[in-house]
Length: 392
Ligand code: FDA
Image (cartoon, rainbow, N blue to C red; front, top):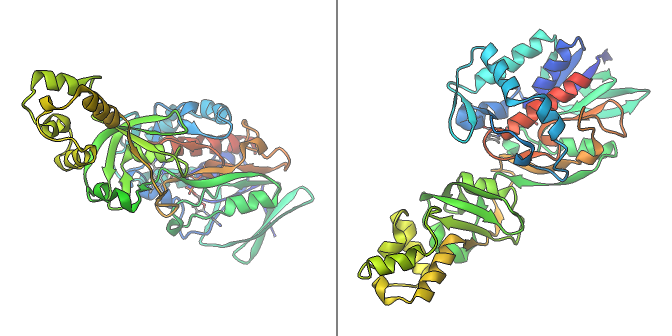
């Protein structure tokens, strides 16, 4: 049996930084992953350029059953800290929009950087090995892997969530947590396209049309002003992905079309240009095909001057909160992340250690902390990994 100070399960974003941090503090670390190579989600992230952090990181940009849990780790390892590492490795980066920082070149540079950090810490990395039995006795965790057994007084669960199974994602973190008596908040797909029922065929026919909206979901105060994209199955684009994290089955998602329009804009158009068609006035600022679909649904036609203020007021209200009732989402196969996960009530917010299992830690997406779209999820992976890596 090989003996270590810590065994980290999962060589993704969180596992790599956690192992490197502990290793550089002089700990003997074994890092295991069943995938053939480490950091596969990093490689495909941000369209291959990795949106590695967001300068607007703050706890209110995360969903969690306990909204305070992430504060401690996020305040002790900040976007500036991670950026410092990126710059130390000479990786060129840029701010795209909304505080999102991306590599100028390939996301593979981030994986190479984390592997170099692991090498500096003397971390033993084993990829492509299935993890077998995991148990605990006499103050040590024992892990079977690739026909061998390793043991250590610390075990870190960093195997992420089940989003995108074809990348090697599994619900292993939850199985393991439950085996050690830790509660798991029901996981569900997040940052995921939503599907519309057949009755909404009019909108599903708009596949490829994109426009800026403010997206909201009933049952939440969250609102996101970004692009939405109609797809052949329903709705996608950043605004919809963001709101999907808050959406629950049965909730209505509303779209505010052309968000800068002032109140009373259609009634004002009626007074200013009464001979203009309703379709033309209503469609200003919208893609043609979308304007046609909305107009058909509103059932108003002819010159705007012939329509009553009441009808125009009702149309304005509908365009400001256009309701869609999705019948589902595209599921874990298409979800960027998972909402839910290992219950934060089970963990110390300072160290990520399980309160009732000394030496057992959970970090990254496996934990019930989920960020908005735009680099927030990697920042949580880095911050939680760092907290555990410093505590082991
Ligand atoms: P992560 O999933 O990275 O790593 C888990 C590791 O555990 C994997 O290497 C996996 O192989 C391994 N594993 C799983 N089950 C195992 C088992 N049973 N045995 C052994 N090993 C196992 N976020 C962001 O902030 N900016 C972005 O640009 C993007 N872009 C993006 C694009 C796409 C397509 C996806 C799917 C996701 C993103 N994300 C993102 C989200 C981001 O990738 C995610 O939040 C982090 O990778 C989470 O890091 P973790 O280390 O927790 O899990």
